Image: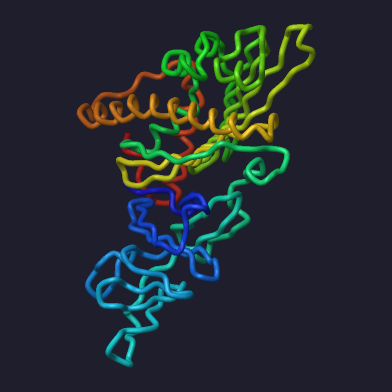
Length: 340
């Protein structure tokens, strides 16, 4: 399948990129990520043109990367600057370099035409850099097409049944959603009044009684899903206790059947509570693993039944609109629809 190439994708957390080369497959292309000794993050094709050994097995030397097999050395732009034992370096002794920009604690890669790689198009995630917010964060890999993971994040009605021990409550599945869309955004909103907080919210917000809750799920292509979720107490004895959170999800296709999920749970309360940050992170790992088991099975079922269509229901309005948006963008690009 083809992917939407003309967008910025999360290649990794900035902290993942060090002077030890990191092999990663992005949009089904082998990429080596590394940081030069001066601190510049670089993304190159992970294949030495000499004998096609992965450059990710090599070593960083100053501002360049040396192949571990025969010692060819490449600069940040992918140009070979040294071949041991000879003075002439042919022009074809080079590898592709992808634009890589660090912002919001991520390294963003552009897999399309480099001339169109405008950093102003990088998604905005201010909660990750603001001193008024603190975040738990992580990364997981799923054995599924990336669109299935988008489905899961845009339609949260499943949380009632899949995530009872962490974020699920009975009211999520039974509360109708309001869905709107424009050219490059889908918004799914759910308002739950006078309801029980989830276990995670009860612990995080110190809620003793009932709350008003909201979920506002915003999708923008190709793979950004930000969930604005929070609660405010309705118990007069608790005053106007309120918490705001942002669940940030950046989905990066690895292959047509595997997907990276970079996630962060940002909050605007208890900023100095490191134990709570760790606890929320652990709870989110449990939550996403519960999703992963089902979505990976879903992919296997789809592969076994390629002629069977999924059944949509009322909660799938956002999912349907997001898929239509992706299909339209792929047609505009001249690619193929997601094969799910």
